[in-house]
Length: 235
Image 1 (tube, rainbow, N blue to C red):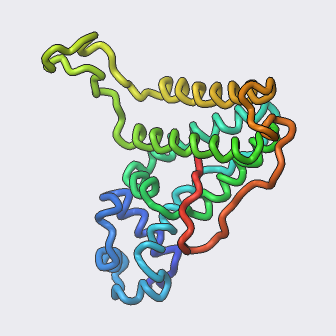
Image 2: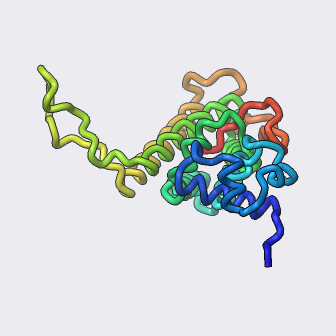
Image 3: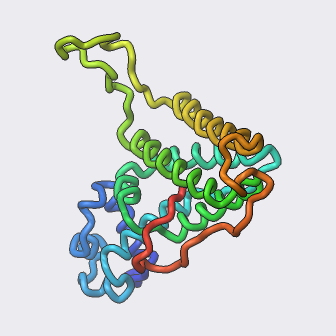
């Protein structure tokens, strides 16, 4: 018996194609062949390829739990989020480059963004600092995604063949192991903690930005299909 075509079935097939061959390999014609349907029938469920890709990205990010305040502090919540994101990128290495490069945020990204904002607001960070921290977390996450997808285990930091190269040739390497990832996460957390201490002491803090005096509500973009609003960093 033929399985009825649905948005969920289309998304699952599209994700399988991207997982196997990357975003560039996805086309409506190829997807229709996999589903054994006419290409035009897909458009009854998905308006265009970009909307289809956004639904694939959202489906992948649904595997990432939204962070919540933890009894042992915001540090644990963000550390757990980073570790889970790295493992997610390891599961879907072909999806991550397209997701990171997309100018459109997804519903799940906005949920995660708002949750991180709430965690930081509860710690007393003012809105400008929260926006900068989330931006830094997003930048860090793009690096984690690349590390998960490609690894850096065999890339030397110095070229032994380069004329006049200084320093060790082959013994200094970026490894990208789980231990290295945890170390980098700890550095990110330590940086945020250092900022919090600096704001608490008033060192270099702009007016109204010290923890304990934060105001404003968590920011979030409206849900729905891409509508001209750039993506919000997700972390």
